[in-house]
Picture 1 (cartoon, helix red, strand yellow):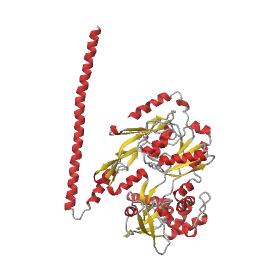
Picture 2 (tube, helix red, strand yellow):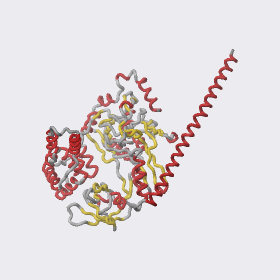
Picture 3 (cartoon, helix red, strand yellow):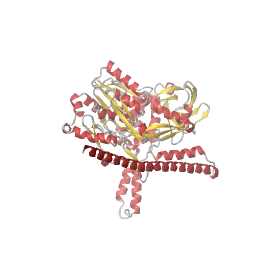
Picture 4 (cartoon, helix red, strand yellow):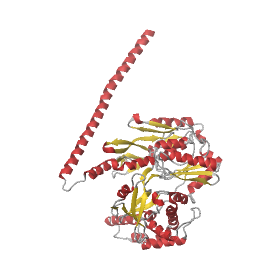
Length: 582
């Protein structure tokens, strides 16, 4: 009986093996055929593209700039994938390097072109050659060495300003209220943008660190700031501000998380089409503090590596997240070398934080007919759980534990800065204000506000009023459909209300405009640190963080296991691990 059962089992195993071989024999050729078909399509389309470039260059009626033409084609192709996949030719490799190191050789300043022409300084960096030479926001760059740049683009001017450290460069500069240009001789330096813009003590012994971005030096800067706050200021809790932090180097995110959780904890896993490139990042170092209460501040511009830090600390129940929902960038880019010393920064994978969720908000694989991309619908998102069983969602960025919406800024505010109206006013303001008080004491007065309003009128300041444009479009549609034949009273009343009135618009937004003026004046005198400190005045999000960190009971209650999940946590966590592998 035993021999019979053994032989029967052996026969069954052989049958199973035979079926596996048959199925494998069917599937492998099918898979191989699909790969061959795809390779043929790549080869075919490359031949077509090559032929089009050659034929166009030879027969097009006008002379053709081949490099620019092909570049437009490359950019259009990559734009159809996602905003993060980009081509960098050899001439632009310094931009790619800057993303990871935050370093370049130059004078240390942001520049921008005006719509009426010309390239202007908008912000020199504190301690940079530009700042030390007295170059200010609003100064126009007329010449660089022997090159007249009055008709150059901002990209062209930027390329001329950059160069090897310790090389000389001569600038021809004209300030808005100078009668004549002035010549300034500078020495280019290795510009290293500091990522920790400011740190200090706020409220009742609570440390505060603001991180602007993630370069390979960010962990060192954060650690240095934290060590100083803990050892020399004896802080009892920490606010880690990641608002408007667009991210950067993924490894730096893992190192920063490593400072506050035990070594070896999973921070993020990347998964893509090339499985051999999948990787799990764990906390690489021994922590410096695993118990100090932490609040992380986020908003809609908190993205990428910044979301990894906020999300992983949330998943590990190590910090309370406060603010607005983050941007939702769960895509990872890697550089790929190209011929002629170029590089392709290409999206190769998605990242998944400790709970197993991916926080990517937009689905670029499914575009609308007009080419736009929509958010992943709520019906397709899943619930995951933190280490203590608190529910969190994928597909929607990082949702704060405490939500505080920031006030929306009217369109007018954007144009006051972007068309240089406010920058030019501040240059005039500086003629009679050689210095201003420290940021904690500085205020924009009603007199300053009225002076700016009058300045904007004299400059004929205008801005794109979306309401006027939409009303015009609606009126045209209503006219076509015959709705205006009987009565146009409603449209006439709306048009009257929406008629441009600069004094009215200024007065309606007085408080917001005064705040904007204070921010830009702070930038002029105290650089990026001044902007940040001005922004922290009456900051509701920071105020809530200080309240939570000053109340141990409230802090621990937010991070505790939800009451209903104390008996269901084991059941609740099951879907999370399954989703993580999908």
